[in-house]
Image (cartoon, rainbow, N blue to C red; front, side):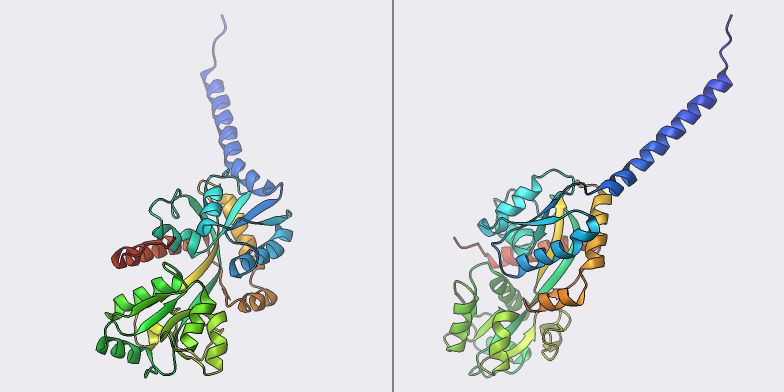
Length: 333
């Protein structure tokens, strides 16, 4: 009669389990080592041209060689960025379809759309921040103010009498000015325009008197003394205009309004894939030529870890959702 050797069987079992565990532990590493094996699509929620498209093409140019595969920029404009965001949110979770997100797709846009078909926080996996853009608070020279504190005092003395221009209902300038009014406890009159150029023209002609503008539009008339700069909207002074104080330091503590450009993937994308993409972006993007090309668009280069970007997007979404709800703002059109 054959006697079953329990000790030998136990040894074989332990060896098998150890080998299996070892194999499982190497699977993520193997996936990270082989990714990517084909080109990567980077979806841009805008038509070619402009800041978002520029950031995406610089990422593609700089990160592709290190990844060993081409990052292909694909422009999917329309519906305020919803088309592109929904496409990426529904894409396979394999790291081959990414989104170059902005406030319109990941922060303020979703906060304005009650019927959005994606959650900007839960449906995307953060990879890295790529850049930021501050705005500038400017006034017409005829307005008797020379500082943020002066503007607040004048607005309090003349409630509902100072007209401010924006690039449209629910846009960054509108939301930023609503936040400014709420924090300063003042009330001004909103005059929306269809774009930055007509809004700035109204300010130059004295039809409106206050505006939060992007740098590309505001800096030339500021340098020509045609409008007066009161402050920039970032918490730190921007190297694009280091002589202009922040609104925070100039009289309204805690005020911040920025555009954020970030790279995200569909939620559920393997962590090792996200980390590999992050490492390549963080390593290659901060080059002198990239910084200059971004500066030409009014963008300051800035990268991050995935966790830092995830925290930033969640905080910004909650912040602007509160501003939108308290002000009763709805997207026009």
